[in-house]
Length: 129
Image (tube, rainbow, N blue to C red):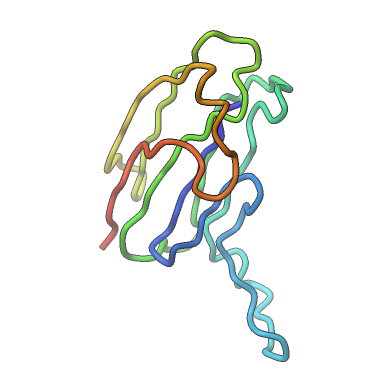
C-alpha cells in the first residue's frame, strides 16, 4: 500500500485524504459548479488497507491545464502488506510526454514514519511553465 502525494505550486498536497486540490471559496462567495474539476485529482487509492486490487497505480491528473510552477511528488509507504520490499516508479507527463521519471524501493522500516501531510520520500520534483 504505497501512496502518492503530489504538492502543487500553490502548496496544496493531493493525497488519499485530500483527493482534489480545489479550494472552495470563502463563505458567502458564489460557488462555480465546475471549479472542482479544474483541480488536480487523485484518481484512485490503490491497494488501500492491503485490499490488493491488481491496479498498482495511482495518478494525480488535471483535466484542464495544470498550474505553472514547481511540483513535488512523494511516495508514502503506508503498509508493506506482508512483503519484504516494494519497488515504485513515479513519472510526470505533460501532454502525454514524459518530463521526469524516478524509481526506488522501500522496506518495512518505511512504514514506521507518519502517514499524513508531508509523508513519504521525495521521489520527483519538476517545474511546469
